[in-house]
Length: 278
Image (cartoon, rainbow, N blue to C red; front, side):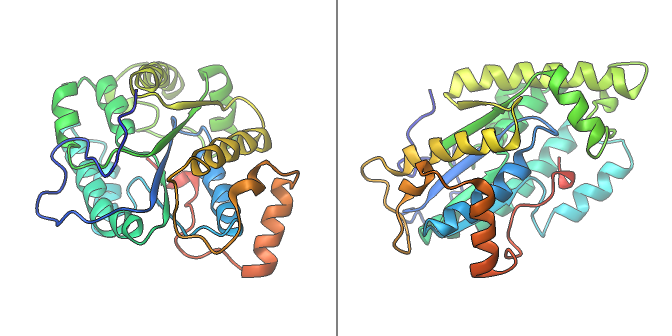
């Protein structure tokens, strides 16, 4: 089961930083490529803000320090698993220090589009030593809540094909798993899904059936988050409204409309498009 954080680090943490109280909440949304994480986060953020919570979000390779470097490195299709892992860990550490921790210290709800578990799953499929990978991400803070969007390959393929398509890395072409990109995608994603399922059991993720419609998935995510926030001792910065609205009859569309009318365009920190990963 997932360890209770109480400001706990997964491993060694960031020893050069002074440990400060973290009254905020860290919520990770996990799941494979193309499952719809960013779409769901783009709906969760305005809902939580309408409920009165201060919200920040962060995602894979969004570090201003590393994102451009990682994207350029991936263009050459020659990254080894070690280089791949070190770049992603550096991106993670930079965002943790400069985005996640400051927001948690200020009492924000931080929604992470993927977390260290994605690295655990990918590296396992790529053949890296699991103990080495976990030690590499020992700087991570254990999330308060991990919501896992679970899907199978049969439902995933149409979404990817109809969306941004299959790319080199998300199809596992660097591992030579098949004779073409489609065959490689199937092998690679089956391996990833198996690892995610194993991690979900090990860490006690809250599993959400992602084979359903966007609206159905969003409704369940809101319910799980509201249940978590309503537990005793879950106070965070809030502008006066209760998370009880998560279980009201308001539709997702109504929440988005209200957000647009009351606050205008979403801030620059809102969830990025699914195409910005991995």
